[in-house]
Length: 339
Image (cartoon, rainbow, N blue to C red):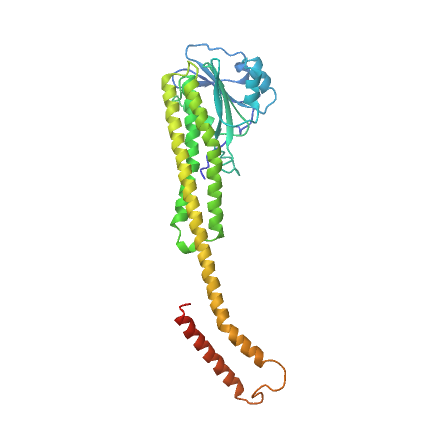
């Protein structure tokens, strides 16, 4: 599984400045300057093209109140941005865009299907993103800004975050496809319970990813169709391309799920065939020794009158009879094409 760095800040994902994980003010030319939590309060653009982006930990006390008091966000929207209702969605609220998106969880010990939510609110001049557990996607966009090659406005900033989020989804899908290919390349005779367990895990991951990626596809469509006026045409085109990529990934998930199902059925069939062959061989062996067991059991009873009980050659006679019975059985089984 792809294993990128997961920290949201250099200090080890700590909210060192109130709820602020990091803050940037875009200069409209692809770069940005850092801003602290104290400067965020009552922020207004000091130059044309400036856009404020702050990334917050929504579990810190006071975030809910700050969203309503400082940004003027309605109470239901502020509750949505800070709640655990993480089903992907997007809608327009006046000239603001509100969305909840989900990305792959690459934190240690997490499974691919354990997706992480990212809430965002933007009015064209200010973008607020919020998360509960670490998510690498905002770091990718922040790194671009710090290198001077990042987005230049609010719409481009949102599309950059969306593109990086979808790009990271592809890592998990490619990993699952590679795992399926590896299992398919294994020899036909190596099917075992461990292989079936791996296939079942892949199928569960596919189902879990599609469970969240399908509504995310709808959310991005709503974002593209109902975005405010500050969301420019080129931003809509970028979102449309992201929607197409996400659609392809959904199709890939369907193919992966079907491939895993076929592989699972094939592995089970081979296991059943192997067990049937083993049972068949045991049946042949049992059929051969059944009359021999009856004969030796009959001659082994401790009663008087057993023929030739005192004859030293009787043992070899019984061995010869048993050998003849085995030969006769083998010839009979071959004639009946049992083996």
